[in-house]
Length: 157
Image (cartoon, rainbow, N blue to C red; front, side, top):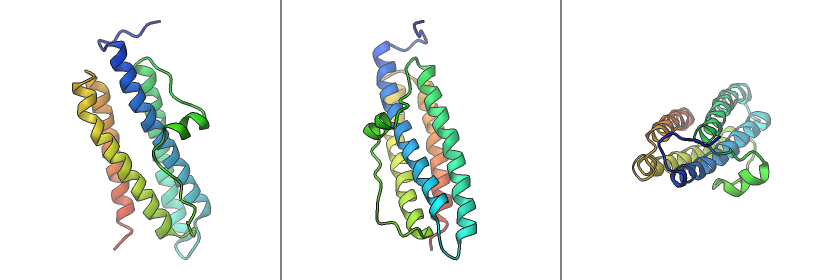
């Protein structure tokens, strides 16, 4: 059935494309956070193991909400690793030593990158594509990432 929510088809497609990129970034960040949880070593192992778990649990909810937002505006969410890896702008670093500082630094950079991506889309989605709902939605996601980044940043002096 055709989606008729007061937004032109081409505009819903443009918004869906941006959300698909965001979903891909969320998925990669989730995976990298899971990796940190699984592979953390060092004297702060226990605390960091629990910290990374709380972070990936938040990201799991974020991913689901982004995919559902794509569906709400009438499009399909990318759901294969091939699709997600083609859409993401995040990268994996192979120089990690499995210590908290290395993992935290990389994850913080990714959160900040996602924050910048979202911030760059808020107004365009509302104004250019006439989708105040998605603009509001991603504003909330930006705030979630700001909070998560703050928690990571608090581990540095």
